[in-house]
Amino acid sequence: MLTKAEKTRRYIIEKAAVLFNKNGMAGTSISDIMQVTNLAKGGIYGNFENKEEICLEVFKYLSQNLLGLIDAALNSKDSAKDKLFALLDFYEDTLLRSDKGGCPVLNFGTEADDTNPVIKQAVNKTIKDTQDRMTRVITDGIESGEFSASVNAGAFAVKMYLSTEGAILVGRIQNSNQQMKIMNGILKAEIESFSQ
Image 1 (tube, rainbow, N blue to C red):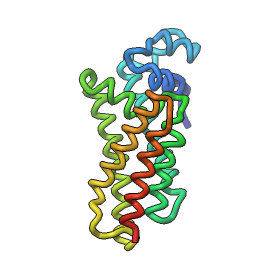
Image 2 (image 1 turned 120 degrees about the horizontal axis):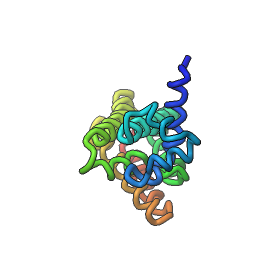
Image 3 (image 1 turned 45 degrees about the vertical axis):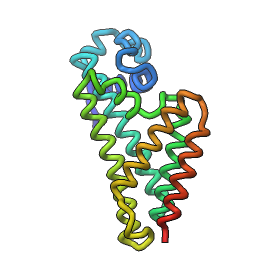
Image 4 (image 1 turned 90 degrees about the vertical axis):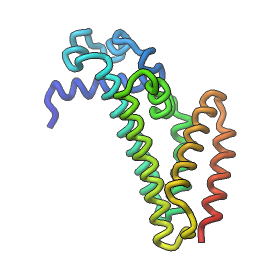
């Protein structure tokens, strides 16, 4: 059971998550956090040492939620092909259309790459964890005979991940899912091509 302090800390993280994901680390102030939480400055700093700690904890929270949703998409299907298709649909239907700022990996990663090595490392871990999940699905498909043994699981996972993240970025900028639909179609056709 969480203590009162742990509940307050969790509450601040949950309330601040959408702010940081939409407005960025630099674009979110302690005053903004105070406003969404209805807490005084002392209530914020009584639970966090500084804004950087809040940023890191918010990214961890968003990352755990994202990986949980990815796992749910993958676990909703039985075959490796269906799992990959479900993941592609998740990226299009959930992350691209999100009213909560889109993909936290893109949002935090872009801002932290040259300015915040701690956040950059956390983002890198989430990228690796996501690609590892994709690689495992493909490897399982190869081992079960569902996919051709000629498929390079790691390379295709990188291709799939980079393609979907890039499509999210472009789709959010253009306020359109057209390029994501095209990219998902290309990736699904390639998955079909190595399915046996």
